[in-house]
Length: 275
Ligand code: ADP
Image (tube, rainbow, N blue to C red; front, side):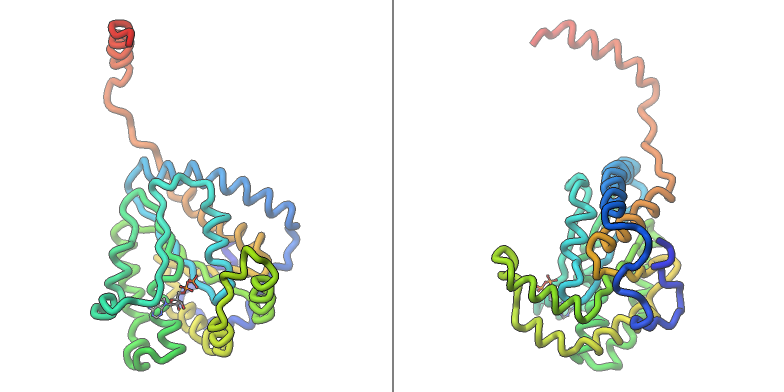
């Protein structure tokens, strides 16, 4: 899955990166592999929690309908909810805006042993903010460097950071909006404002490209995930996370010294106390 990773300081042209997976794995094979990764993730999360040395931060970005919610559900659906958290970054409140833009983010970064998934993130401050000129160019343009240093701080303090851009075509977005209208259980998700936002498609692509080019670092790499096919999107994200966690070579903590000596004591307690 390393071929989805953006090397540091690379000029990214999203129009040259496929949004639709066309490789040899079939959907059926992909779904079987995902099942295996989901199982592995259960054990790896438990190990991360038990070891309590490192923390995992996952950042999900992507245009409307790219599948951020679905990815979380399909990749993390089996893991123990204790020790895993999803944080959704919505429009900042007045209180948020009274602070620097990283203030609301830092409060939600993972503690040791924890997995935190950012559904949208501090990158909105160089995406929607840039596209809609919510602050002047002179302000947002400095943020790429801040973000790299902020993530370096987290990494230096033990965080593993993985960032995924869910890359879809403009046509796929229109198809997914339409699918929302067709399904009674989905049409509550349709918001006419989303069609207004779609008019800024090219500006968003440019903002994504600048983000990828300037903030994929050795300590917090970006992966661009072809996401037109949902099964491949889920598989690719799961694979990167599982392989990264396996690479940490985590160990369960050692038991208290002389643990076997407690066996006799516990057996005596049980023998003495029939209740
Ligand atoms: P989602 O689309 O993630 O399911 P919403 O429909 O509530 O959830 O969208 C959240 C909105 O908040 C998005 O339009 C996003 O661009 C916006 N948002 C998030 N962070 C910021 C930010 N820092 N500044 C401005 N808008 C933001």
